[in-house]
Image 1 (cartoon, one colour):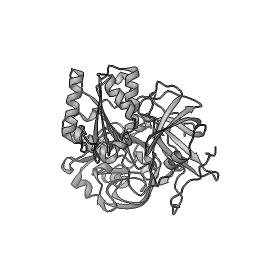
Image 2 (image 1 turned 90 degrees about the vertical axis):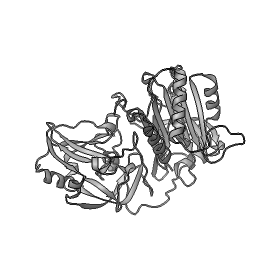
Image 3 (image 1 turned 60 degrees about the vertical axis):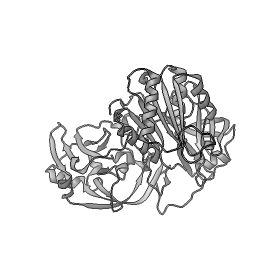
Image 4 (image 1 turned 120 degrees about the vertical axis):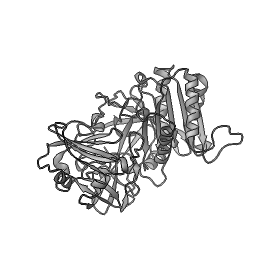
Length: 201
Length: 260
């Protein structure tokens, strides 16, 4: 349906395509369902939990920061319609975390869970082979608390609600289960290029 | 997340539908309210939003989310209040082009935790920064129609008196009902003789609001807090609530990123 009198004011042409329904954002909007979590580094830890609830690995901040670091340059896409190009994240890939924990065949799905109670579900495949990391730096600086620091999940090929802020751990699951927003009707997978915003998309 | 328990029946209506613009009302020099009649109405909860999709003749599309300002009690109609962002893309279209009779593509309702239904009871502490008043107005209206005894205090932070949206509604809501109080903080420009707050939200202000709400309420039930507005406002409000000992599980927030 063509909207009467609308021609679009493309303020700038993206240097490369962005997903359908998105617009370019220069800032970095903050969207969270509750108060910002402020987790002191000396109380922070990160856990990997197996499908039976068994601990697979746990790292305090110092131990976590001694794991191999990876830097990625990527575009990010929020379900609230903004896309931000050319962001840089430094962190530990899920591959490296699994290697450090000695886990070779994780269950096919995972639930990321956060300080403050947020959860989001992902297929494990989507965070392997460098596709997902636990990031602690954004554009060369420690990640600010309102953007999910000290450490957040970054899975840039999916809508950014999947990149859980204030990450506390990852629990592997034999079957897919909806996380926080997914129970509210957000898409179970969330591919921005297929515009999978809500159930049924 | 304590009381933040998702409602499995809350799935959004995910198909696009056309809506007819019935009315355009000027709220302030930069806010207009658009009353839409939905082709395929579905119930919504106070606090939810709709997505709007505009399509240019060459197929280019722009989408934005706008909170519903009206109460769910008016079935089949929704009010969307749009704040003009001068260098934006969608809000200038709304302000300069849209008129009664136009058709717009919308889908919804969308949105989960930032909603209120009468079974959640109260008392309600509603904290609005700027155009963050929009979903809180829906909650306040719905409270008045569906649960008029639930005590509510709205603290509305705006830059100056000319920025206050829904002034008439808020004036009468605060005066008509002993279980509603409306407090205003004008952070940059105050009219002569202003007796409300003249500063940004802080812990002392929220302490006073909670004390007033508790006095109105007359018992010890913990208030449910809803804070909506620009990121800076919501961060300050939520941090201030935590600093005076409010349980995190009772605080719901909705931050507006810049929406062009």
